[in-house]
Image 1 (tube, rainbow, N blue to C red):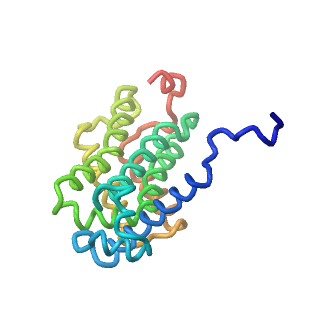
Image 2: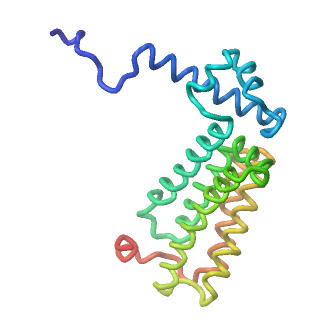
Length: 219
């Protein structure tokens, strides 16, 4: 068999590419419709008319309109988990590390602002979406709790009640995240917000300027 005849591995064929394109069309149409008329008011017919596809095509990819939102929310959650854990691990400067952590979270709010805006509008009216919303909000909370617990045990934080500090800082992060979502904040403004929040964070919590890196790696 010649080199040209060897099938490429992990490369979608024409039919698979068509299906992926159709699914993306459905996803985009759903989000735009949710934003225009509201999630609760949207029907599958509304979505498929915007996508310019047959009604039944929707059910080749999703069971319900709820599944579309859940898929987007899961993507946002996975992104925070991945980037928050692995971003800037070699940085010892506390301010730079905190800013890097916060930037990951705020960038995620911005990148997924459409789906978060939809969830903000409707999660109280839908039990499953409320559960998804809570899971999404818990990601930075759990990461923050892990970081602050470790930092306090290393003696580089102020002697304050840990749970109170976590709740207060996480509340600030969520409030700013929602502000970014609702106001379509641009990248430059996010940079400024991140640096300011990072400064507030370290001034309120930390007594030293550097992490003990070798100990951090064993965390």
